[in-house]
Amino acid sequence: MELPKTYPAWVFDDSPIADPLGYGERAVNFILNLRHPRSHLPGKGFAGRQAFRRDHLLGFADAGDGGAIGLDGTRIVKTVFLMMPRGNRKTALGAALALLHTIGPEREIAGQVVCAAADQKQARIAFEEASNLIRQDARLERVAEVASYRNRITNRQNAAWLEAISADGATQHGRTPAFVLADELHAWKKRDLWEALKTGLVKTAGALNVIITTAGRGHENIAFEQYDYARRVA
Image 1 (cartoon, rainbow, N blue to C red):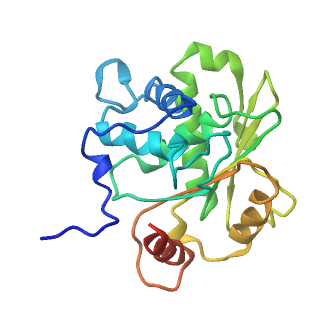
Image 2: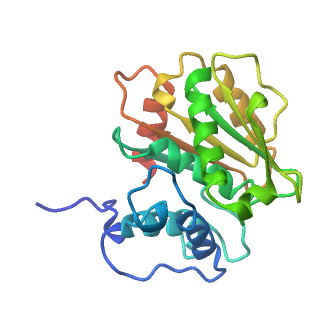
């Protein structure tokens, strides 16, 4: 069977991926050095799959034509759509990416990082995943201040902060996030938060929107709109 032209063969082969600025390797190393309390890997390692490393390397720094980051360091790819089956620690991966932009090498001074979910319970899960990753490493604990009662993590060194919020809560206009994690987007009942976050993202240079979701059902939801768009531009 002939594979479509858009088939991502690079995920599964060993072909080189350009990373002239080193951003990709830097991001991958930060995530792979995290420790997850429920990991079965040696030393509670976060991840070890080659596909994981290559996927994020391209996502952060392929400086070639059509790559994710230009030679001047400007982010070209601004939205990432990841559809993952249940049981693959989707939320843990999202939390790791959020920490990458809060206390990791992608952090910005006073940068805003938003972990958004359909409801308060799911948002709290993302926050707890991020908090648990911090608690596994004394170096991260020295940098990060975890305010559990506010669902907020603050970088003590540069005032960047992460906050978990839900689509069923109050209106969130006025935010200008540098990074957004949209968790389980197929379950969002209302568009208000999605539209508010999209508006805020365009106000921040180099902002990144990462959608991580399971498949869900039906075509009348935001997740399917983004899935359909991703397929058309791939």
